[in-house]
Picture (tube, rainbow, N blue to C red):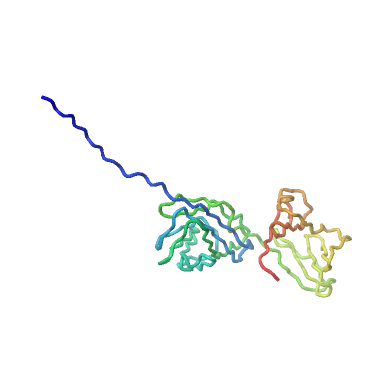
Length: 259
């Protein structure tokens, strides 16, 4: 008797859908003055749209003085996509953005938002290893250093030149005393043993023994230099920042506002 062969049919599995990615995921740090507000700028572009009620989580921004908030203000061109607010957790440095009703994070173009955190109260090296995540997406690593804080040099004295030069102040740790001459409109910096005078004039006074303010086209031309005279001031045209050499490193001052 002839018997027809039989064939078993296996279970056919569903094809695996690869996770989506963030084609753009950048974070730009704002001012780095200790204790100052720091407005950070987040730019994202997902490979697939993120729909209403879905969340995006930015994690690792530890060290800020900003307390927990369920409604941290979000600004920037894309703020309305997230209802102009976010959920912030201080201890873990986590910002959760929820896509508002009727909104979506589009693909094919960048979405840019800003949010403000308060920098650490004292000098801090900042944090790295920031991540960006959303359900169904590969977690993105964001490069850069954030929430780093430097102690800004403030004018500590306003007095006549004679009174300033006759004084011998004690400099705070890691800082210098800066004075303003009410009768000369000059600045005076005390380095721990002597006062140095900066004249209020159009061109720098070549007769002074203190290092001059130097201007470079690019930060890269001097940033690796380690033997500058103490308290040398440098301006970089490409970053529009001021750099002050102190003992072993450059201290960087951002252009935070226009006078």
